[in-house]
Length: 335
Image (tube, rainbow, N blue to C red; front, side, top):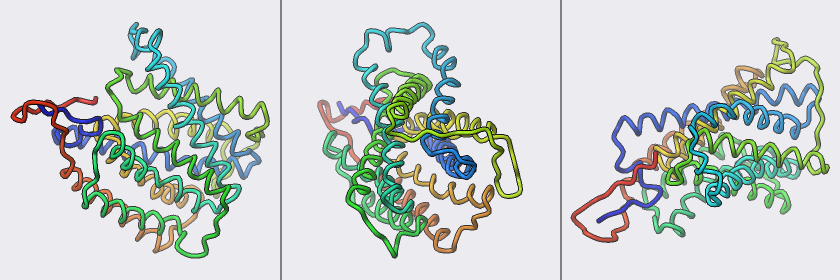
């Protein structure tokens, strides 16, 4: 019998499932990509990044509370008295939600924003290495080629080709953000624990909100907010409008659809599709802030698209691990 390892659903999934996975991944990337432009308005109005991020995560956790409880449908055993799942949700909240954002916040205090993002977005490579070392899924040459193409595109989008200055402390914080992002992709794609996506997202965001709030209380994360109006070009809105957008769209929607994408595409492919977040960040910065993308950034976005396509083709090189009868194949549904 052939049993597929945890990242294998994309190989055997029907076309409709793959299409849905790509759809969820693009929605998630777009939602995450909106966060920078929305937060920029709050930062210009006097908010600290820590306050904006904490408000975003806490609101999302509150919004997903009822859907998460409904998704459990009384199956409290999935969490209560289940140390493994409780540990998964806690790890997701601490590393994938709070850790990634806290580390990135500190990384940009030592590095250029583009450099910090580039380090964080090496997460797909970390996912490939993890699947290789942990599950024996050695990447094929086509997958590696796709990763290189996507990495070059990412560097062009972030404009870090020239004039890069590095700081060791900043790089370490950036690597911490990368670990958090990679954790997000790996845990999101794991459907074997039986946790509905809304439960994982809601529980993780709740843990993340508590962690970020605690960091603010002890002074690790500067917190400052106000109720001044927020400007996006010629458009002026009340402070709560971007806060609601950050909570509902860039967190609640982004995490739920990201988990749905991971469980259909597998963590490797989903992590590369998620690179479109940086492309969508450029689009929203253009629409809301009037920051027109440069030609080199547009070329980088095209290379990211090519890289993702090549990685998808490379998925065909991944083979199941044989543990029994070679004539039989058993596909594990990760939904």
